[in-house]
Image (cartoon, rainbow, N blue to C red; front, side, top):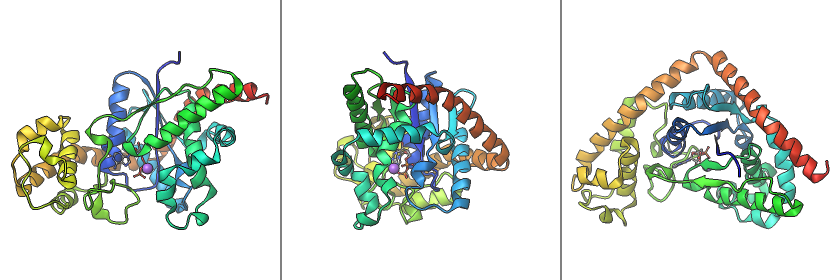
Length: 332
Ligand code: ADP
Ligand code: NA
């Protein structure tokens, strides 16, 4: 048996948004507060699979760290660090590049989405990204990974890599990690298009609520969110064919820590002109303290760098022996 250990990561590529908060940060804080050992990583090596401006990358890494802390992650309880500061991730990733099969990688839908039509021009790193992600997780023998829906396929690949490594070398060395994808916040959709997920990389700023948005901006984005002309249905069932309405109700439920049933009991039958202001008030109430705390923390970047360096030391203390054993199993 493996000791329960949680790992997850977020890319420091700017525009930390409501989907990242509800699908990741808020749930990380809940996991930490249940007392499980938790390791959270600013995955800058993933970010650079597409070109990043160096000044912005450094800023985004610090801002993301501030976002973690402002969302309730306590650097004294959880390990918070920056991926490029712990070399064991890329060392194990090379091993996994040799375990994973080309065919497995070619099936990854996120690569297809991100590479777009001109896949020949995508970086080799973007293609290999899921093997690095498997290394991020398995270099800590993490047993649980809280993520959003969008990461499900990558987690399956992580499990396949662990299984193949264990089989190839006749060992029971890497755990078969469980994805933890539960709750209304794991699939937050764009405010402009109910069929697309809310994302950092969406060119439209109106499509997402950024954690750095002020109260007026949050209210305006919710007021302008795309909806159909009907009022909210009176029953949960009535949301089925209405992706935009369902998305707003899901966001409300996740922010309020309520079930969709509870929310519908409260708001079912209301017009959007009534529901949207309620939603804006709730979003501002929950997000304003986070954005305020983020800007306060960003005034002392030396302290943030100190927290990341300390976290990297603690992460390396777990990762180095696991990498050493991996090499030993392989005869290196
Ligand atoms: P993005 O996709 O916006 O670039 P990342 O890939 O860095 O964000 O993902 C960071 C975390 O946030 C992951 O756990 C991911 O599953 C989660 N996440 C990203 N977008 C959403 C969303 N729209 N809804 C719920 N969770 C999300
Ligand atoms: Na993503």
